[in-house]
Image 1 (cartoon, helix red, strand yellow):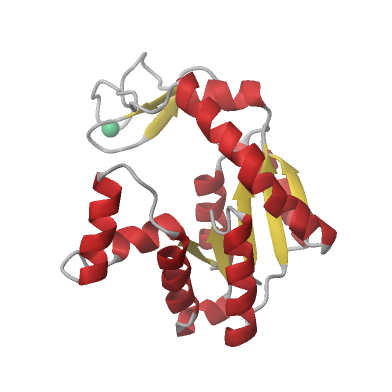
Image 2 (image 1 turned 90 degrees about the vertical axis):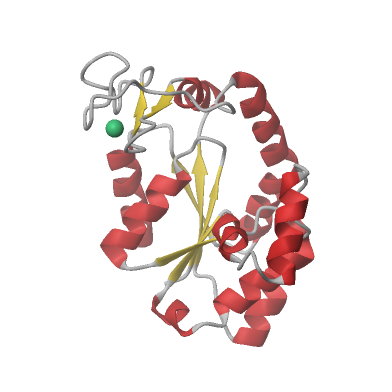
Length: 215
Ligand SMILES: [Zn+2]
């Protein structure tokens, strides 16, 4: 089974991808990780790091080419989750070309939907342990640290990430509305979209998703 995972900001995409990987052996493929995985000593690696250090986005051509190389590998045969790709229509068209060339099919597009209020709580309530990287939330009632602002695992004081603020959430929501919702609509017209209310707790989300996938 091959899935595309499309998610509104703070809809829990990473967690869902991780669970589907562990339970069903689907390999998550994320464009971000492909970019990070390019050998920094190669010309392409240097180019990518230069673009990112200027705070710019890597071009579609580079992202699409890396995706194509990744989808050509043998391990995709046991099923993949495309995590955060395609997120704009240009990437959808590129993926269509790749699929024809590589004889690869997408079975479902899972759309994790979340309302703005929930996304906001998840974003501004998120805390991370600087030591063991475990994440918590102090607003949602889910993954609350046992002792205020302290890591359950190692007792360190918890941190906030710089971009976990309302301003940056708004930017990401607007990008999503303008660029990614058309991707969802495109696949809806093809009858491939499974829409999941991702405002619920993760256990409920997974249950709903499994029901829809029939697994
Ligand atoms: Zn910790």
